Length: 375
Image (cartoon, rainbow, N blue to C red; front, side, top):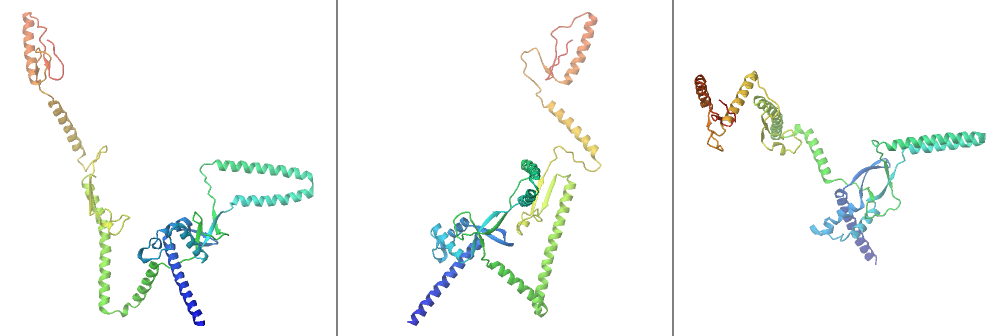
């Protein structure tokens, strides 16, 4: 009988140990996967989470999907809430409550009320006449306070935020809602443990550097020199790229923008800082005139001459012949016009000397201008 009892106790102890291990594993998963916020409670910095977020995280875990051979613990939200109640009873976390803190104005108001009560007692002892005076003064002060509060409330640029403090809730029950729960279980993360172990080993190895073999010392020397050259090359490249950009910008009057390794000093990752190798951009100043050196006047003169040539080309590009409505008019060039004008003048002089009159229908049209000289 005694052996059976011992066997039962051992079996119960094994089952309890397995349950505790499973609970700690789930609590650790929930601790690092559930989003938390930090606050202060009773003068200590704590982290808290909401109940609905915790249930969502548990339903997305391996214990709800059965992946990696994990037992199915959470088949619905009720099972997740029941398990969280179990963790709450084992004090992995506790239910909290946020209470609005009393502002300084409310505290001052209470102090004034206490002072007023004391004054009232003294006034009662002294007499009824002084009571009336004190009441009038109190009314005046209350009216002033109300007016001041109304003015402050009307100011749009002074938003008021009530500060809240966190305390433990009287009813320690887990609910699937927006209630907050404060973590008391704070395990060490594996990354933190590995980083601390690496730092300790590195410090011990550095202190024992004189005892290292000669080959390891030479390897560390070459490694340190290569790292120093790499860092120095990056610094030199960062300065050289700025100098090259400035020279190209100055020689091209700000039109060509060439950056080598544009993301070298940007806030990006290590590999992204070397991508792309270069960027090129051509810019043309639309409103501002860029001048270079002493050739400003010659450039302006060449620009004005170029504009005159363009205007002449536009005039010459017009059609040399146009279809008129009748056969009475003929389109001629400017050179022919000069010759015709001279012959006309000579004929007019001869006719005037002979007393002849010019015919009214002798008119010459200039191509495109619409001016008709009359004789």
